Structure formats: structure tokens, C-alpha cells
Image (cartoon, rainbow, N blue to C red):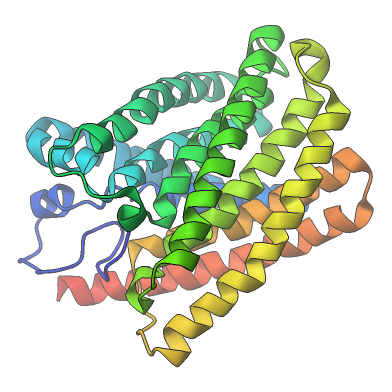
Length: 350
């Protein structure tokens, strides 16, 4: 998820602008825009900023419809290109479709749009089942498959984010529909996502510590390392809330694990900031717009939402207050990335 081209367009050569070429070259991780915008909307709503939250929700919904149409066009018009992406090093970026769908489902349910929320959840579950198997199978069975440690990037954590986004959306919808089955789905997805996170975290730390890391490899998508932990914390609070309906896990156990994960998530933040400083200041990698910057917006917003909800679930008021402040930091990051995207789009079209 790197490059300098705008709004999900791959970097590299820049042919004369046309709608067809723009859709053809759409970055497979373009739905990160919806993820980031949607979670900032949630964070602001949690802090009581209903108007700002509603505007961001509308922007996220519009972006989702546009990107969904463009993706459908790509699949029909350039199926070979799409299939190649599912077998390439950026394959996990395709999974942004799933959390983008489920973030919108959760937001829609929160504002009372029940049937759109249910429809989005159904699509999100289908997308998770399809892409959640297609992506790893494509990598494993690719004829030119390379060692996993060499291919590993922060986008792999989208495997975790996708599963946990289903858990969060299912728990939200279960408040008014199918409480038993959706509570069970919430618990199962949380457990699966937790195991995947532990496996990928070990692989990610090994990738950073064992092999030399080049400045160009530390793309913003590595922030999904933290974002995946944060959404696992958020999903944990949802599991605890629906534990009585699911009858699978003890709320105390789930909240205890969520506190441990929140601690690790918080520990990661200074590390990621330091790595960004090393990349851009010490090694002088230019700081410019790339699609992967939306992978920075989502973790910042998700950290705020997870902190707020964990504070509510445990009665720790300081955690909820931290989440409220983080919501406005996430909004500032969102605005900065939007400005950079618009500037890049303007340059791209000249």
C-alpha cells in the first residue's frame, strides 16, 4: 500500500487521466479510506460530536458506494488483473473491503438505520468468508511464492481486522436482531481474530527484528499492527456485552484479555512514532501522500474508540476520557490526509 498517487490509485507511470485508467489502476487497498473515515465518525459520536460524526458518516458512505462500483467494474472488465492481485504481495490489502463494510454497518446501526446495517453486515460476513480464504489460499498456491518473512507487511494484519470487524458489527446488530446467533458469531470471530493476531504479531516482530529493514519498507500500513490490536480490544468489549446471549465465554475473562491487549497496543504507539521519525527524518524518505496513509488514520481512530469502550466496560473513567481526546486527534489526522490527497489529485490531473 505505497506510492504517491491519489485516492487509491497506484503510483508509477502516469498516463493521461481517464476514468477507465483510474478504475483499472485502483489500489486494492482503496477501501482504507472508508475504514478511516468511518471509524473517525464513530470516535466523534462516542465523544458527543454528533454533527461532525454524521458528516463523516455520509462521506464514508459516499466513498463506499463509489469504490464498490469501481471495484465491480474492475472485476468485470479486468478479471485477470484482479486475480493477479490476489496472488501478489499486496493481496491482503484487498481485505479492506470487509472492515470498510462492517464499519459502515456499525455506524448505520448506531444512528438507527437498521435495515441498511443488517444488509451491510450480511455483505461483510460474505466478504469475510470469501476473501478471508481466497487471499491466504492465493498466496500459498501461487506458483512463484516467496518466503513469507520477506513478503510480510503491515497489510497482513487486515486479516485480523476483517475478522474483528465482523465481531463488532454483529454485536451491534444483535441489539435488535437475532441476539443469540449474532452473539455467537461475535464470540467466534473475536476468538479467531485473537489467535490470528498472536500469530501475525510474532511474524511481524520477527520480520522487524531478525532481518534488516529498509526505510522504504516501513510504510504507513505498519500502523495496522496497532490498529489490529485496538479493534481486537473493541471487539472484546462487545463480546463481554453479549456474553449472556452467547453463553460461550466469561465477560471477566474477555475484559481481562482486552486490557492486556490494550496495554500492548499502547506500547506500540511510541515504537511506531519512533520508526516514522527514523524513516522520514533520519533516513530522509519524503513524506508525501500515498494510499497507505489511510492505514494510519484507521488505527488512530480505532485506538480512541477502543479506549472509550474499554473504559465504559471496566468503569475506568480515565480510559474513556483518553478515548474522547483521541477522537479529535484522529480527526486532525484525517483532515491532514484529506488535504494531502486533494493536493496529490490536483497534481496527478495536470
